[in-house]
Each structure stands twice: as structure tokens, then as C-alpha cells.
Image 1 (cartoon, one colour):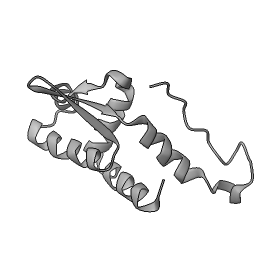
Image 2: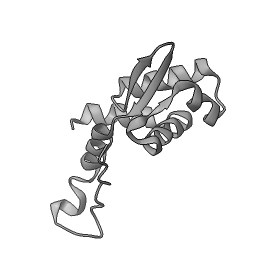
Image 3: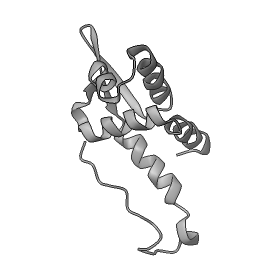
Length: 109
């Protein structure tokens, strides 16, 4: 992952509503969640949620799929794993250490 990509992802996750939405999508797994369900779960107006999901999508952290008149959102697990790897790649000056470099969760999504 390049630095500018990591900055974009971290900026997107730096807002409470976007972080909560992303965590809901991670929890949902590959099935994702419908936009209306996310809005209800987070108690956020649909227009506000749409703005936040667009920011996450522009950062490459979520993907969307139209299903009729509804939109299903899914976490981009490859981007999430890439961000975790980027943040930990130089941990402990590159020395292998179980204390220093946490292993990214292996999601089969």
C-alpha cells in the first residue's frame, strides 16, 4: 500500500460515523448490509449515511452494489488487510517479534 492510499483510508476512518459503519460492514462479512439497515443500526439519517459511505468508498474501504432500488455495501477486506500490513510493516525496526507485529486477522471473505 502506498502512503497516500493509507492516508486516505485513515482519514476516512477518522470520523465516528464512518468508523462505526465500516465496523458494521466488517462484522457483516461478505454478505454486506443494505444502506437502510446501516442507517437504522447507526441511527443516522439516510442522506448523512450516504455521504459517509461515499467517503469510505472513495478511500477504497467499501464497495457497493445496486440491488434494485436498494444499495448493498460490503467492506473491502483486501484494503483493510493492506492498511493493517502498512501500519505494521516496519514494526520493531523490521525485527521479528511476537510482541511487536500483530498478525492481521485472516478473513476468508
